[in-house]
Length: 188
Image 1 (cartoon, one colour):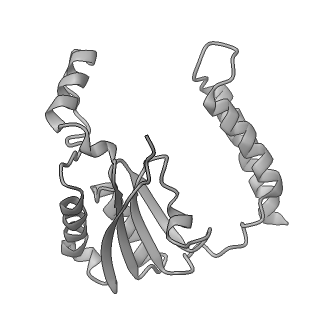
Image 2: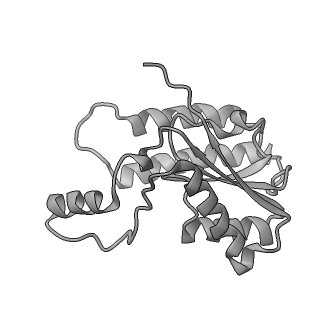
């Protein structure tokens, strides 16, 4: 029951933080407002706080942030089975490595998986084009990120991300790192 009460407090805290930093001037509901309301309802019935912090399957996954990807059901996982680290393109960045190292060395994951997918937005642009667009909009060259990690070949990108993980000295202690690409069924 203590876990349940803590979840309610977290929902209340998010509301007070949102009040301190309003995101919009209008009185109309935004997607963030909708999400915060849904979170309050979710927190009232949350019952997974008793799950251990360590993932049950000792698996960590780096996956694309694409809203169409539902990683857990696609891989036969449920809440608590794996750490899922998401970013644009499922790229093994410095921050993804940081998360993988914490996942392994502090939270016991033993296997890592890279998941990319067809119809990925990272396949649709060139790095230079995005930098030029940002420069034109802001009238200055963005300092960060240094790279957006756009790619042209999905399968080669998966291989490249797996090589990045396997070559990192702090990552060699895991029992395995593999990668795959998921096909998104798109209907026109």
